[in-house]
Length: 181
Image 1: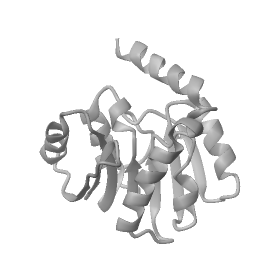
Image 2: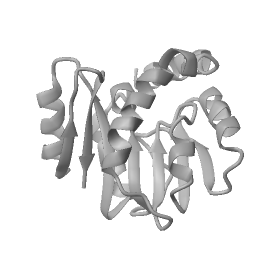
Image 3: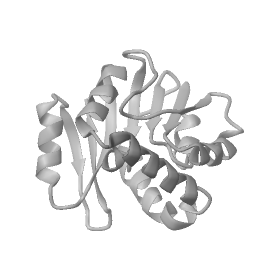
Image 4: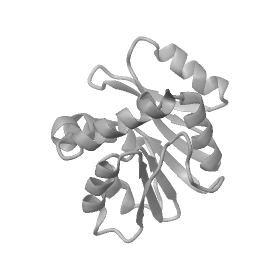
């Protein structure tokens, strides 16, 4: 059952990859504008963009980081991200599932999962993977879709020992933005 649902999700994003930016650019930019000022990024940082989609975030973080790895479950989304990141030598793109990251333990100092967790089948498994690949004091920047169970979602983060440093919620955003350690 899970593999069938994942294939359906992959196909959905493959079909919408070419028009994704037209549909969601303003919404995504509003998240970046809300969250990036609250972060410090340096040339020493290794950054994972988990669920990078078309790579909208990549140009905003690649200039300020040592390494950026973008992963996505959709090959067509990664093709769009590749076009967007061609001018950066410090960007790698990987076809992968956030629930099963093909990455070493403790290798990223910053991990973005924006508009990602709402699309995974097993949030606990995805969060465990995000935690595993983060360095000891890594920042995890996560969005939680507002759908009436925000308290439950935040409770899951706390139960999994994510230390929430910041929660940003505004009427203009469809998601709650969190920064966790």
